[in-house]
Structures are given as C-alpha cells and as structure tokens.
Image 1 (cartoon, protein in one colour):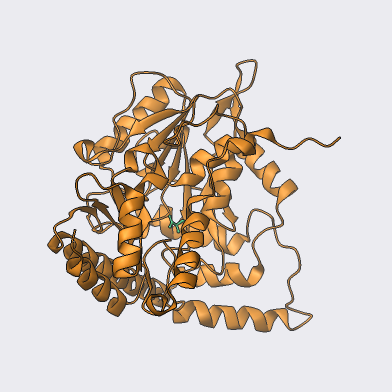
Image 2: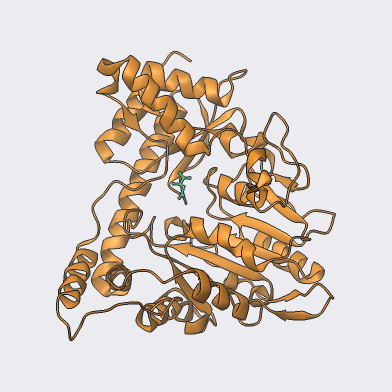
Length: 412
Ligand code: MLT
C-alpha cells in the first residue's frame, strides 16, 4: 500500500488563484457577452512585453545555443557566475551592501524558493506569518506538516499569525512570544504596504535576540518610490546574521513567463542542529540546489543579466513607472467610488476595503458580475484580509482607466 502525504488534505479548497480562475471560467461560460468585456486585475501577472535589452539578449543567447562552440548544456545549479556577479554587484554592492557572488542562488522563481526553503529548515520551528499574506508561505508549511488543521476562516493551528490591519498600516509589531521563523513580505502582497527602516530594524533585532530567521520576500522591491524605504533587508544592521532574502525578475523585468529569480543566503547565517549546535545554512541550501535542481536555462539567465545593463535598467524603470501609473489610476478610481483604499504607491497592488457588511467574495462576485472586472478577494490571503479586495495594476493603461471608470459606475 502506498501512502499519500496526509498534510495535503488539510489544505483549504484550491489555491487562491486557480479558484479565482475557476469562478471566472464559469462566469465566461454563463455570460459570453459580458465575458467579452472582462478585464483581469486578479493575479499579479505582468502584461507588457519584455524590455528590448532582454529580447536582444535572448536572441544572442539562442544564437549561441545554435553553434557547437558556444552551446550550453547543464549549467551550475546555483546559477551562472555572470548572473550571480551582476546581481550581487548591482542590487547589493553598488548600494553599499556586503553580499558575495556565491551568496546569490539563481532559481526559477521566488514562489518556488519560498516553498523550497523549508527543505533546509527543521520541523520543530515555531513559525510566524503575516495575516493577510501571499498564500504560498502558509500552504507550503501545511504541505510540510508544520501545522494542524484549519478553521473555517483558513487559520491553521500551530502557526503564529501576525495581524496586519489598517490600524498598524499593515506592518505587524514584533510578537511578545518567541518564534523561530518569520515570513515578511515588503512591499507587501496583497496590501501594497511598505515597512520603514525602524520597523525592519525592530524585526532584525527581534530575530537576533531569539536566534530566529527572517524569510524576507522582496519580490516587489523595484516598486519602492519612497526614498526612505529600504529595498533590501540587508540594509538593516545585523540582517546578514538572521535573514534570507527572496527576489524576483518577474515583477521588474516582466519574467513571469520566462522564470528567473534569486535567493540570498548569507554565509554568516546560522541555525541550530537538533542537538543545539549552530551551523551555516548556506552549505545546506547549496546542497539542496545541486541535488534537486538543474539550474535556470542559460538563455534565460543571459536575459536576466541584460536587466543590469544601462539600457535594461532604463527600460525596467519605464515598465515600473507604467505599472505604478496604473496603480495611481486604480487607487484614485476606487477612492472616487467611495471605497477606502490602501497601497498602490510603492507597490503594484491597491488594497480596497469592501463597503460595510460585504465580504471579500461578495465584493468579488459583485465586481465580476456588474463591472466585469476580476479582482482578488482579500479573504484568500488570510482571516484579516476578510472585508478587503486587491486590485492588481498589471495591465494596460487603457484597461486601468476603464476599471477605474467601472468601479465608480457601480452602485455600492
Ligand atoms: C499574485 O497575484 O499574488 C502573484 O502573481 C503571485 C505570484 O507572484 O506568484
């Protein structure tokens, strides 16, 4: 008899985005006329073409693959040296942050890495989650058997939830109790909030005090427009001793379809063995990559490298400005519709409060059926997301303007 992983059976319904897709499919089948005017502001998937510098790098790399002398087969599992160096130099050392090339691990996505990191962390950790938050952190811990069962609101026994509400500007206080792992995501998905230097310093100090590890998801770092907000957790003194950072090329270079990201694991980061000795996580993460992964394709890594050229940087900046321009249109539109809105300034997500008494899924259904716009219900991100919904700014400007107009035309 073969046994399955029972922990999967604890997962709530479907993963949020497939569940939205399922409901939208039903809507399109039942109302084909309305489906023609559907605008998707649900999943945070980019819509604009890749930057020209990336396209040119892809063409060059494909040509290399066409000749025996320049062909590439398996590459280093942890990423080609040229890309690790470009990342460490441009994203860190040029900003005065001490990160070595070999502390960068190139991967096929931050979503994968956020889940995979659990491979090198113990099962006895007490884990803190922001609430609401990107569902991958919770679900991967459920799959790994780190939780008990969920209640009706999707809150799992065994996790420590850190409420993120309008009252704390969606940045949780450090808890009184001791935890071992803390997931932080800034700029935040889904609320669009950012954490200040003081707030991140409090988290780093907490982690150092408790020998905890911060799992810092900075996938939306490129959207920070406020000069005071840190782009990396390593801007905070002591973070090299207590933080792993996840970064992605999906939301800056538009790589959601190409797949490339990276994770920073400092060699100074230690965790305890079962018998209480401290040892580095870096060799374990390297061992994991070399055992379970064969690396991101050469062509894609050359494309990612092009983001760091002067043309690439300018083109990415223009893309970010485009999406942030959409966020402004959506934020102002939702506000003019009488909704209370957050985010959308340093992030591509606008977080809107549903009118009094309306649940997130009720708001989803109303907006889908009456405005023919897909948004993401806040309750899908956690108990504290109930009563909110997220509007993604990844779209054309014309669509963002149309969504803003339709939201205002709705009778709330
Ligand atoms: C989202 O909509 O939250 C994102 O697209 C999810 C992701 O980046 O995986």
